[in-house]
Amino acid sequence: MILDPIVSKLLVGAGLLGASAGIVGALAVLRRRALVGDMLAHAALPGICLGFLVVGTRSAPALTLGALATGLLGVGLVAQIRRFTRTGEDAALAIVLSTFFGAGVVLLSIIQRNPSGEQAGLNQYLFGEIAALTRRDVDVLAVLLVCVVAVTVLLHKEVKTWLFDEGFGRTLGLPLLWLDWGVMGLVALVTVVALPICGVVLTAGMLIYPAAAARFWTGRFGALVALAGLIGAAVGAVGIVLASLAGSATGLLGTVLRGDHGSPPPPGPVIVLLGGLVFLASMLFAPRRGAVVRAVRMARLRLRMGSDHLLRSLFELVEPNLPATPDVVLSQATESLPESGMLERLVVRDAMARDWIRSTSPGRVQLTPAGLAAAADVTRKHRLWELYLLEHADIAADHVHRDADDLEHLLPAELVAGLERALAAEGKLPDSPDNLRVPTSPHALEAGDA
Image 1 (cartoon, rainbow, N blue to C red):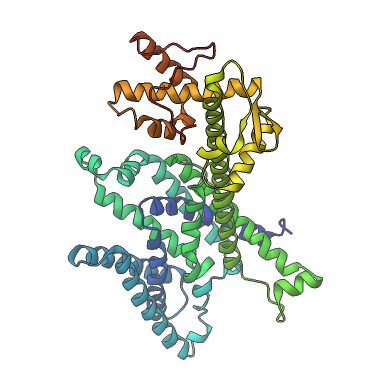
Image 2: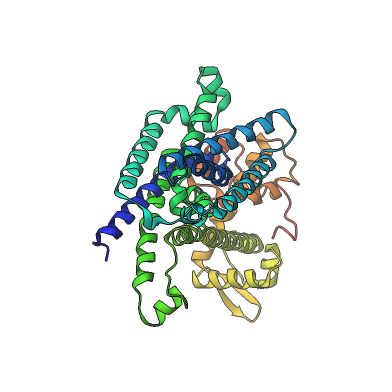
């Protein structure tokens, strides 16, 4: 099916457009102008209608120029509304979007009442119709992608400065206004070209979802722009394939996909819907910023903090009897844990699974040799940080426990060794009464500490 010339042409065209939209959309999203594409798409509708009214036929150059003209006019009006009034950018975008789109709908209804207007096919600009893509259109999309990539690569430093540090750009004398208009012009050009494929309603999705999804995978500018382009290209091509499969599916699947009228879903909505699914998957499962991954990471951190608190409490309870480790009441050791029965059970179960503690009788536990070593290491980090805060941060002795408790779980081994060396060199590191290298507490232990 993919080898079919028509499907291949549509696949290449959608991929080229998706790549261009992903790259310029990344610039718009990073500039916090994600809705500019939506406004441009809606503002282009009256330009399309005016282009048809001027030439009297569906001429691609006339419709494109008309759409580009009213789109850029919309961008200019948003800038002027923000400059000369106290209207915010979001309100200005909404005003221009709704006004221009309303004008476009009125003009479209006027055209449809004319005998020649009924055959104009301008309704496809509302929802898109990629099936009308020609070989010449694919060549235009290829040239457009080359231009977008060339501008992004050749002006990489300037665009990066414009996006993230305008003040520094002004000191360098960069033409920030021209950069602003140039990038917004690229957004407008891609938007106008995308209208026949995805339509006014869905074009904004092609600009926004690739960049929004890419931000979950990387925080580097170059990688983000490249990844947004790849996501846009892949989603565009796969969307065409899925729409083609829906058109050729048989049986129950074909009935579900095509409905009672036997018409397959148009490719434009399929592309945008697939892009939404890619964004959802990125939001949930991206390795660094995905919601599921972050939730798992946070759960592991809470478990680790609970384990540290349990071990330190057990160590301080048996500290007067070292090197012996008598059993203690479990409820005393878990007083320092947050008031969560589930977390307490998980922490105790994890400590037993790691062979840190063992149960001696109902409600009583004892540190194992491995547990004593782990508890001594946790307590050592805590007290070293307490001593450092006491000696170098001028924090009162009755406050250092709370501050050390916030940081002890994140101290790397190199920092702990550095703290120990610094305190020992100043003669402020108390000797350990045993061979566990745990300094004595710099403050009196209270029930809540142990």
